[in-house]
Image (cartoon, rainbow, N blue to C red):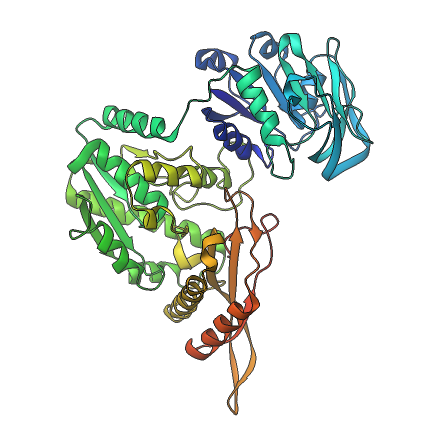
Length: 509
């Protein structure tokens, strides 16, 4: 195992992802993790992440020298590299020239960290401080035109530091560098596979739950579906899957979920469908702020589950399909809150269950899909695009009303249908229609209209932590636009969102 110690940087979760791509198990922990706990976990290596602080600041998070005496290989990235230099006697200062973006870096290929890397390679920089003087016993192993210490190391102590970010895709050979660290320097075997995760999870779930009853919050999306089948394998009929149709689903989706997981579907599950649309609409009436909408929907979900649990009787555990990006974006740990996912940051203060079980909590989306394949879930379910738990409630800007839900359902259905017909969907990670709160003047026939603008969005991404807008062929967009304005009552304008993540989020809310 590799431990990633989180100092609050924006790319921290990607470090764990890249390590796992080397088939090495990795966990992310806050920088407050004690030395005693680290010793107890016995990792093969430690990675310090980036972070927003300056190491010489009063509130700078840091470890003392003792962590470097554990004999465990350490790789410091960005802030982590500066922390290593600062703690071990070097000097960190404000850089004369800040570096941001793709930068050519000259590396010493004799370093174990840079084995197989081009002498001149492109890396992603993002820093205003720099290492002005390296500690005794270290040597410089990489530099740029304006950064004399782009990397340093004390190979005898297995301490390595890089000023750039090897975990992001823009660092062309970053995967090679991280593989060198975890496989060659740390000596990890690289034999952690998804079947190991599935087997271990089923075993640990059986031990945890024993003969208790379990309620699974099933939305029909990839994450909750994989969680449901995983629990079914672990505890069988002790599991009841509750599907809450909150009236904020895509067109026809409630019936589609029931067809798969209900009594006539392929899975031997206890399945309950709760039609709660009016209840959710009433709670959302007059609410326009997206974070507030998320929290209202999250709390109402829990209340429905609690009521269903009482009907079943003596339910101890609530299972949710929380995945790692949900946890990060909800601000648990040291990262900033981007948005509260209804199954993490959107939970109410009081939950009437003995424990919430989140078996996929440490997995990225593509890892969840791999787990689904290991569990034998059909490919059309495993590969379907994500859908947020709060549903269309957050794809409607402003107040949620039945009329707006009808508009966005119909527009989204047309968009997805035409994208699939054109064969464009194979290259897209997520695509959907959202409803803006903008109304504008249009003309249809000989009449004036004053109707809503629908916003279409499609992105490509491998991990949903960063994303790029997808270029949809113009003829396809033209057909989609014509259909939406002609077939969806209340819409007279169609816009396309070309913004990536960051600065936007994937959802439009």
